[in-house]
Length: 199
Image (spheres, rainbow, N blue to C red):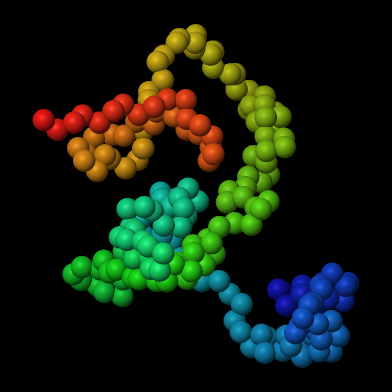
């Protein structure tokens, strides 16, 4: 049981408390603090997803491979206020899109609550796919299954597709190609072509 595990960790001295919670270091105080939680039903209710496993993966991928808010949702921003679109799921029919305005400080605070601290990764592979031994494990699995590696196709020189931005050009709607990527303070090597002057 979860609470029994917490008690065992406490008795072993593996739990450390700070600040207002420092009193929980005492065994009696900690046991009394846990007492209300024993009334809770510690059972996770889970049911099969309506759309199947693919829908679950699609849902989770939106959180693992994107930032907290996309640029397309931003409406306006200045030194004082940031406005962005959000979807109100409480509305069952009609237009769910609304615009929220927050002070710039509050917007930044909320945005940074989605940023992982240093040393954390959004996706970690465990077990057979753990990075440290992945190649060795996969090779061993293939040998145990009697699989042979497919012959590598001869390398052909293919012209790489130009890097493009996800957002289209705001003027013409065409794809915007990335000409160069440079760091802040670094001088770019290429110059943008001069804009055509209107006759």
